[in-house]
Image 1 (cartoon, rainbow, N blue to C red):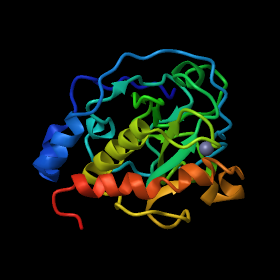
Image 2 (spheres, helix red, strand yellow; image 1 turned 90 degrees about the vertical axis):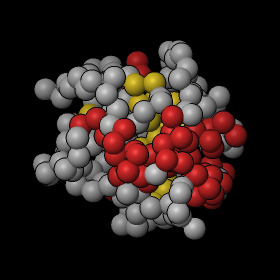
Image 3 (tube, rainbow, N blue to C red; image 1 turned 120 degrees about the horizontal axis):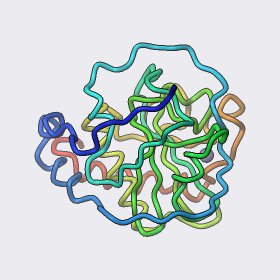
Image 4 (cartoon, rainbow, N blue to C red; image 1 turned 30 degrees about the vertical axis):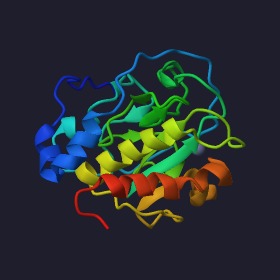
Length: 228
Ligand SMILES: [Zn+2]
């Protein structure tokens, strides 16, 4: 019922071009790397329920980021039901290896829009126009990125770069503001922990990685045509 099969060969470049040539250049420079599977153990929460909302008035292709490995899930997400595009929530995997197999397993009830490896490989599992199951009550308004590794270790330079590319794409395509968010109602680059109990009461991604959001956003701003 939740299955969808977006055309992986048709990124919406018209919207990207409208966002500025420099941004398009930055986005198309993203990694196109092979993927691997592993046995990760994410601790994120599924989405028990949600009120159906009208989808954003964007073409389906604009929910998929160009220049990353596209691995659409067959389950564990909901088509549509995004009521806002407030930005991106940073998560830590507490493990290594692609999360595709886990998130595509029946009954897992967990997923994220993106996953970034230590070396900056980026996989997208769910269109950001659809609802992934990463932070419970925050799923309708926020996109999500899992980052491999552990909360006690900083994001690698390659991960900071990769997350900044995702965020720059979200800025240009979905209006995510290039600023830090520390509460669910404030758009920007947030953390799983900021949602508290309604988001599953996790410390994810930990203070170390949460503190790297300023580095991520600095790189985002540097790549935007007119942002200050
Ligand atoms: Zn998390």
